[in-house]
Length: 317
Image (cartoon, rainbow, N blue to C red; front, side):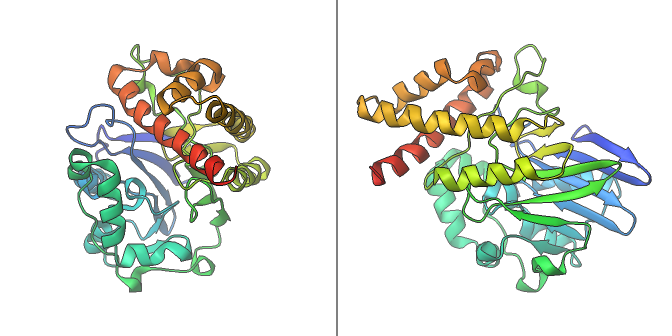
């Protein structure tokens, strides 16, 4: 068995293992270690949590082949293409694969055309070309939550997306929480390359795109604060054993709502609001240590997250 450079071991004990497979977007600086898939192996089970985009599927398939891992279960935290876009490719190559997502979003996997069109319109031509259109997932591959193996627990965590879920699972002596983007974007143990000097630092960047409803997102953060886990496996990017993450994300979320509300009253532009948050939010303090390409990536997503709050506040003034 060969371990490729795209595979990052996270935990291994008692015949069980957890790996993070990085899924670079070729030709997109700043996205070398941003998308990923979690590979969990236990006796009788090989599961993936999230799978990246169709454009990075070749890297995922090579990693699985090199590890001699044939997944039988794919769990999706939410139906955004950077998390689910390769699901149809996996179903094509692994016909026995079963797929779970929030039931309200399953139709977007079966018929992904509208999801692709909306994503391409949002991302622009260059990024859409890197993502590539998703293949449909056969309806027969989808399973309901009551059909999942009993070792998996599903928690509804809407906010970042209305159909967002998180997963709890014990593996390799760890109590895992696969939280997608429910707490935001977190530079975990896999994200050292985000930093110009290669030294990882702490922080959280909200992931609150339109149409975001702050209190719904905060209730999900409270659920994850109360959940039983000792290793948080983020969608972007890596793992963290910091149990304070949900409380920190909750505090940040409240600060963002208050700050953006005041910025709107003061007539600040979106760019001015982003700069204000970069100055005043301690969770964003380490953005200055990011590489130029990572800073460029985050600048786009910061603006999108501000728009999520601003749109909600504008509609509920």
